[in-house]
Length: 142
Image (tube, rainbow, N blue to C red):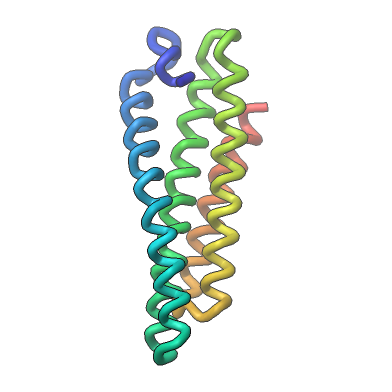
């Protein structure tokens, strides 16, 4: 919402608004995909260990993508907060805080799934980098 009201106040406001909308749509789809992935983990636990590892990898990749969206959203919110009118800044900063929290939570789920047996520790490194990006966006906005 704040991105929409930043038109005329923030450079590239229109492209930021489009990107924010694309993120919103993708995040909604990922919520459904995450439920499917979790169910696959539960079903795979009754199967062979390789199926469990594959299911856990998918269960780690989805929150990793959520973390990516969260970090991107934090960046957008920080840019909007820096340039928007005072009466909209509170909404932009609130969006920034929520994006950082979502990134942190998603990064945590990546770690949980990798520790449970997903075969790629590099996913944790990437998730931590994304959370750091979101934290940096918060730190530069306060």
